[in-house]
Every structure is written in structure tokens, then in C-alpha cells.
Amino acid sequence: MTPSVIAAVAAGGAIGAVARYVVMTGVTHYLGPGFPWGTLVVNILGSFAMGVLIELSALVWSPGPEMRALIAIGLLGAFTTFSTFSLDVVSLLQRGALVPAGLYVAGSVLLCVAGLYAGLAVVRALSA
Image (cartoon, rainbow, N blue to C red; front, side, top):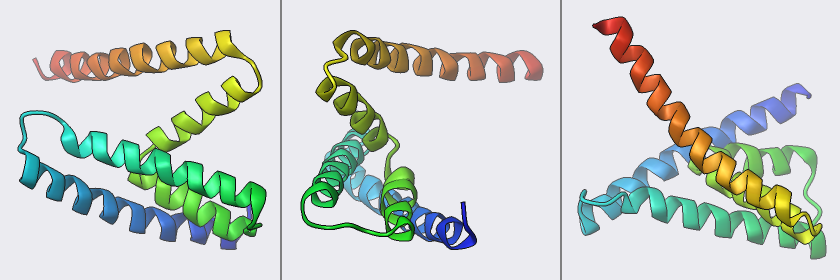
């Protein structure tokens, strides 16, 4: 962990966060607020971008640690953490780890939703 890698993550994070806001706001404006279309769109776009980045890095491009940190961790991490989740699932599946992949998917969805509910409950209990 060098200062230049940390700076790259910070710069990518700033870009990714702004991009997330712009895309989510635009999608919600056009499709309406009745369904989380903006979140769905950024998750799909982020997962697609992560796939492109990983495959390009494997086949034709060898980015340095700063560039990799800027794009994969900073930009895509701030744009959507779902892209990292998707990469983790695909990595497990490609290694033939079907059960761990399934447990990871189910556990992530169930435990993260439960975590959100727990956070709501803690704040409601403390503010009552």
C-alpha cells in the first residue's frame, strides 16, 4: 500500500461516486422512482465494466498497480460494489467451487439485507 496507490483509489472513487450519482439520477428521471432502476443499471454497468477490465488485463493490457487500483477499486468500487461481488462469484465458479459460490451469493444477499434491517432497528431503538 503506497501513497500513489492510495491516491489512485481516492481519485477513482471520486470519479466513480459522481458517475453513480449522474447515472442513477438520469435513469430515475427517465424511468421513474417506483423501482430501483438506477441501482440496477449501475450494478449491471459496473459488472460489465469489471468483466471488460479483467479480461483486457488477462489478454492484452497489463495495467500497473496504480491504474488497477484507480479503475477496479476506486472507480468501479464507488460506482458499484456489485461489480466486485460479481467478480468474486465468477472467480469461484470458474474454479469449480459451485457450493461456495452459491453460499456466497445467498449469504451476501440475505446477510446484507438483514444487516440493513439491523441497522434500521438499532437507530429506531436508540431514537425511541
